[in-house]
Picture (cartoon, one colour):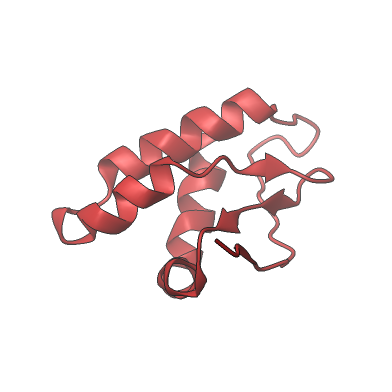
Length: 90
């Protein structure tokens, strides 16, 4: 199966700009976000739980979608994902 990858710079900030976050912090926040997604997004949330986001070069995060459909669904809620992660790892 061919995987779709969307490289995009996403800045995740927190209250203390000098305080970073770890790969483990990112994974915990990602999975917590997926668990809190609304019921109408249950299918997407379940598929997103299987994704492991990666810190490329702080603060850039890479998320590898399984296919273009999943990529488009995640791009549609990108601003919410960004805000949730920024709050979760702050």
